[in-house]
Length: 162
Image 1 (cartoon, helix red, strand yellow):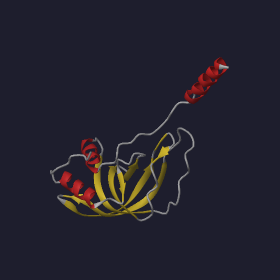
Image 2 (cartoon, helix red, strand yellow):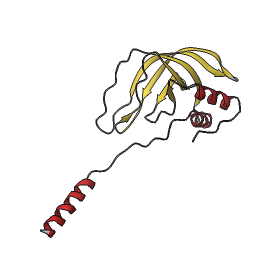
Image 3 (spheres, helix red, strand yellow):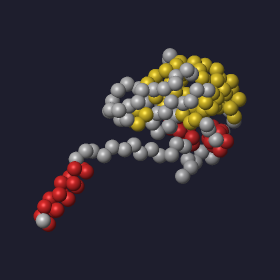
Image 4 (cartoon, helix red, strand yellow):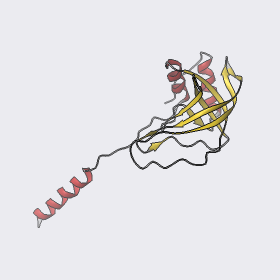
């Protein structure tokens, strides 16, 4: 009886570890960290606070590893970080790419949502490269996030929050 119970426990433990455990672990999105990454990147970025206008209502659910990112066209209207504040007018078409890491994907920003975006300037236009861990796109940015990114750009305190 004890041997049978022992074998059953070994089988149960083995079945729990048979499949690989996969989890996405993201640090809390931080505008200061994103600002530093963008300023150190080889690509050119501008920081825009505004509304993302699009007609995309959903994206396919990911159920397996791999696959192409979801890309759609949108319009970003607002202001870009110019000097010490968001004073430069911005109104341009942007390509939004929603990337995935296995089955975890960047969420679709709500239509006409208030965003803070690190917009990559490319040869073909502007790109918002949304990642599952939200490094380049912040929906509904807080006043504290706007103040932090403005401070970073003006050469002030740009310490990532804990």
